[in-house]
Length: 344
Ligand SMILES: [Zn+2]
Image (cartoon, rainbow, N blue to C red; front, side):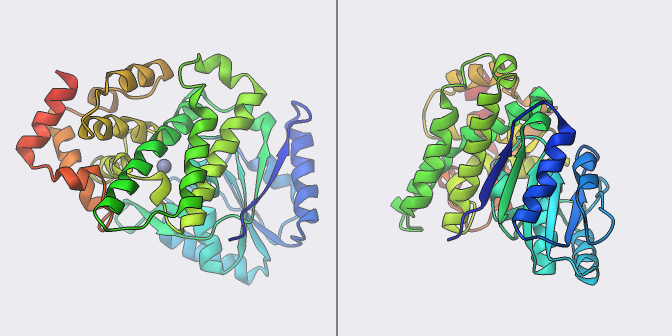
């Protein structure tokens, strides 16, 4: 199981120096003709790289067809690798383009909003404009441009933490599935996911704005998100870092086109997992509020009926995955009772 190589640039505040360093790193990695996919934020990095053809910037509706088309374009251009520079959506597109083109992918995150940075999974829109989670190519290398990551909006840091808050619950769901004889636990994958959470746990009750201005925190968050991605590479699927809380986020995407960043929705989903395990979610909810993460359905623009619909839809988003949600097997009445119990 080859894990991605991780490179980091934190020598100065200068984005242009980081761009030059990225270009040098790509040469060191032996990429001679990279095909670059970059967000607008990633443009400065894209322009520093000698590429197989002009960089492509995916529009907001870039979907699986776009990835297929771009993969063909990369092959026609004689590319030897894909370099994806941007937020989570651009990195996911890059991983899928690489899968379609049969090339390796190097990712350059410009924000730390979820653990897809280095997972083998890509969440990309289908023909109907719905997010779909697909097997793709895991990155062969990750490049962390600290000067750019430090400038990301605070909500992206909160979302990154939100995605990691899910890990212990996803592991609990995995154990539940194992207890039902449905799955086996892969211990190395389990340990990576647990370690990812342990790295950020001590920051969950701190002031996020001051954390985000500390380069050490930014590096640790990146390390945790990468470890979480590696746990998925190790298990070959998203199991170690994705349980009922992710099904809830996927259901919000399916039914309402997404109401917040992935990690924000996942953090919200954790409230239901905790409650379904019979624990009091009050502590988690106040933690989420402090971090600026959604702690009430109205924070995501969901009324009681919409929240009920999300709970009933969630198990359909991931057929074959057994979590506390499948175990609870909610019907409309028990879903309403659960919502009332949490937010009464
Ligand atoms: Zn996630």
